[in-house]
Length: 50
Image (cartoon, rainbow, N blue to C red; front, side):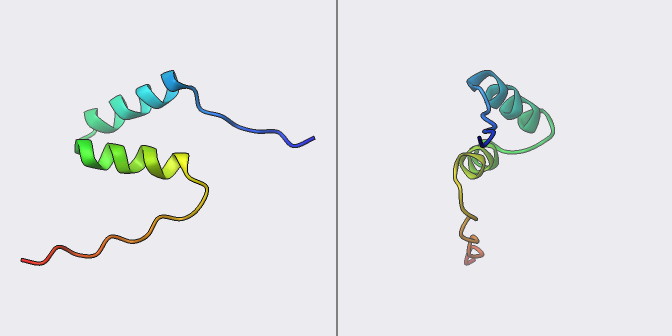
């Protein structure tokens, strides 16, 4: 039988708090949580045009 690791809502909340307290923006925190929740690699962001 395959063992499944699941993060609880409390663990995700603590992770978000840790990321914010270590200087990450709200957008970066959300991107991190979205990455953790998916089961494939994220599409690289294109550099912003100035």
